[in-house]
Length: 325
Ligand SMILES: C[S@@+](CC[C@H](N)C(=O)[O-])C[C@H]1O[C@@H](n2cnc3c(N)ncnc32)[C@H](O)[C@@H]1O
Image (tube, rainbow, N blue to C red; front, side, top):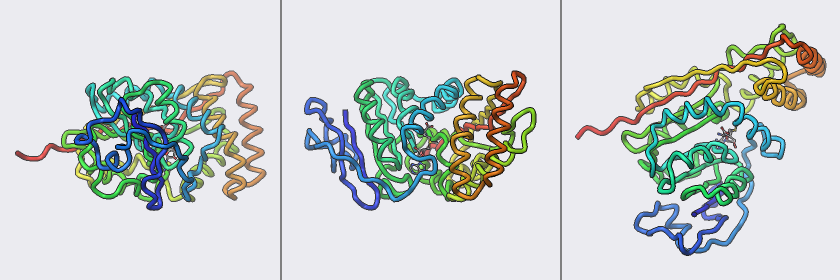
């Protein structure tokens, strides 16, 4: 198994992980990044450096646990979105913005032992966690790149490499998601598929209605926007996909809803209760609004007929056209 971490800021070649001598791949089949980093047979472990880019939700233990619970809540829908990739055993697939590897773990079974998993994320911690998981769970050949998707691989290096690219809950963060879709289109082989999953934030609601909750939703949207992102990126994705020369073939929207104590209720509670304080610190929510939200949410939690509706989450599948013969 090959595990690679590459720091951004031009510091290519920061490597961590280990390549067992018995598993050194044939160098003629190696991608340029692997040729640079992977031929020694044994790579000294070294921690990647932290990135100057601060991902708004952080990379602490709390976020690690939250992402695992989030995957559990959305697992059935995620399998349906992954089906849209039409992956064959032996495929090479990228999880763009892979986080600590929740989706890579699902992809491992889909590509099988002859497949190849590639994960890219801007968080050094997530790359480390995903690498440990790859080793512990025996994923197929796995490459993990640390860096921003916009700049982690030199132009041209990954072109035409992937049968499939998956990207869930990432494009709502960067300021230019269209440029990333363009990069993904270049990285796909002709006939390969891109599946992007992200928010259309309309529809997120709490019943009985709550002014405090409405304030937190306004603040959440402003929080993403303050980082240059958008919780409504799903609305722009058809345009971005077309501009990148991809054919949009399927669109699969999902809303989840639940009463107090349900998995989706707990998912919402963890996010909004936890982050309401950060939004106050960022000046996006007043102290009074934050207090009102927490009080009203607790009241709704004690009401067995209260109900939470998630934002609309949309999975888009697009195909890179095959070249004319
Ligand atoms: C909400 S998490 C989702 C993680 C994973 N895709 C999942 O669905 O479980 C967003 C992830 O995107 C990463 N991310 C955000 N913007 C990025 C960028 N421009 N380049 C690389 N990673 C990015 C963050 O570090 C974080 O791990």
